[in-house]
Image (cartoon, one colour):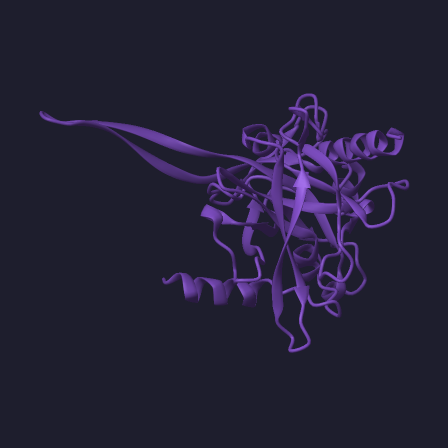
Length: 274
């Protein structure tokens, strides 16, 4: 299948996130952005934290290893703006990730999650998620999210974008491991989802089943893409030795409880700065 056809299918699966669309995938698209650096690319999403961090700001959430492996002090956040003809235009927004060589982000102490307060220019088709849409353990229980529950993941596999505006690709995923709770014992879960470079930091979400109207159910973020699993096969012949990597189509998803903890810490650090 060509990349052009793949992009069209992605847009059919996950709408471009127009302001009037309140379905779960559209709302997630409006919060999800590409973190671009010539040497490292990942996915991130914006959250409006509890408490005040200042006008025009949000907390960027991503995988910690993305920021750790990105050299230098700045990245581009690929956002977009809505045009009068119904299309979207790319808007690259610079963001500082280090000052004097020191990280500006907050990393979770044990999990592959990082958060950074960033500026969000006015007039863009960007909408940070309310903090309540990050699933706490009680949300998993109340919403009956379980092994086999289906949802979606947003990301930029192998740097790929759904279109020239930098909109993320939306793909189906399902929870593939048991159990999910208690979270203190199960910090991550498996998802039936093939991860590529560029997907790390992307959110996995479900349409909150507690909604009275399924068509307008809010997204509930249940995890964050951290890694993928594969089987390595060593092949030896008389004149050649090589390693073949077979994807198991399984990804490691960090539980959203740890995203919540990291967002709160990042917001608190930002609020305490002069």
